[in-house]
Image 1 (cartoon, helix red, strand yellow):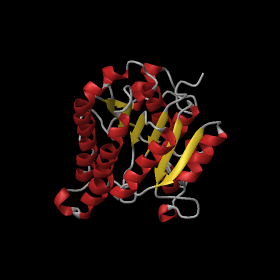
Image 2 (cartoon, rainbow, N blue to C red):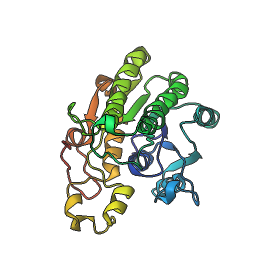
Image 3 (cartoon, helix red, strand yellow):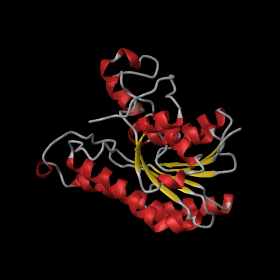
Length: 277
């Protein structure tokens, strides 16, 4: 039995990376998944591998149901339109995964923040933190119409340790705090809100940067301890299907810790330990 049958999910920023892995796992578990992002077939951001259409195709190939909706989540009207479409087509929303992130193309090179361009703020806060906040703003009224919903924020977190890049660290910790604050606001509605942190993911862009692919990545020393984006997907799917998830609301979890708790592995059968800086 598919644990999430009858559930409706929205995964933002799901053209590639964590968003794609999460959408695929939710779809495999039976949820009807709305997949948003800017990259569509024939028009991918920066010609990067992966589009929302590719994600939907993979979900459908596994027997799941998915809908691709092109959306730039820095444009509030587009975000609102996605929620309106879900309301019209499904009448409800059960699972929201805030994964959109606008800074994939700038890396996280260390450096004193006063030496870094202020433009990094917009990349990480306008196209990251605010985009996730705006999605919450428009989606929560629909989520509140049914008790038992769950909201996730993907982030990066390592027990409060500094990540080594000021703007990245500030933005990712803001997402952790956002999850906590929203959990307090929604506690009486019975909606759980959690932040989930992957480890070193073997995303399409990481593979491309290393000159590797999913067939030969184990030959690359720097990639041997990576996890696939499906690992955090399985973590979020496990949480979404946990009837006691409200007990975890407001907290932040690492994918590796959740793998141990819920008993899942990565796609290659490995248990990948929680990542640490």
